[in-house]
Image (tube, rainbow, N blue to C red; front, side):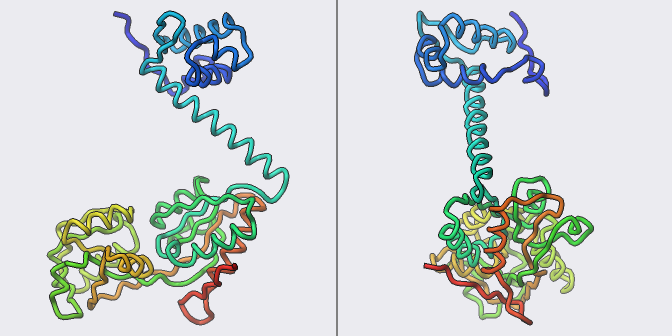
Length: 329
């Protein structure tokens, strides 16, 4: 039995993978026969047959089973075809976005934000941007400040709303301070702690499991320092998660506790997802703001979005609170 060759890291260069190969795979995924696929590409069937044979030769394994005039895709062909479709779709999106930028004003802007501002004021900013700049497409992702800063540095997002790292890396960014994000402890509404007289003591919360940010997160580090300051052992059962959905689902099924931004906790409390624990713990963490890389030439759409964010998320003078500008109708 012939041994199958593994594809090396630079396989697409080594095997001389061509754009036409990708187009043929996409056409074959949409048509039942090689003849129909060839016609859709403006090729004669013999030319398409040679192109497919060339692709299978350089890959080193058949991608289709021949059943008369029909080509039945196998597992290897399915993998290659799926990614070929994704690559071609991405190239189409690249063309559309590039042309939109050339025409001026249009484009896609990616924003990464910690959960609190997303729930509260970022929604207002997005509504204003959509009304005033309908040609700008927005992509919103949420996460921890640590993860979002990684995304910003690596070019996955254009604008970050979160906390700047407390080291030299922050020097690579323009930073506009916004305000403080109040944090609270929360649990499911039927949690045993709610049978106790408020405020609930940290000692009473210590035996329960916790769902917290991964190690190094601001709120988790703050809670750990509070336990240490009170000479209490850290909870033995801690799950690290930066996913809000995972956290809420886990709280619903267990007696676990978590730390949420007050904006998120109040929103989820409306839907009876959680209840805020009135406790003797004050989780005050550093303020957050808007970050952008100094080294990146920002597009016109990005600067328009930044301007709207600064207007909507403007801080109130001499306070840590935010003055949200209402969405324009």
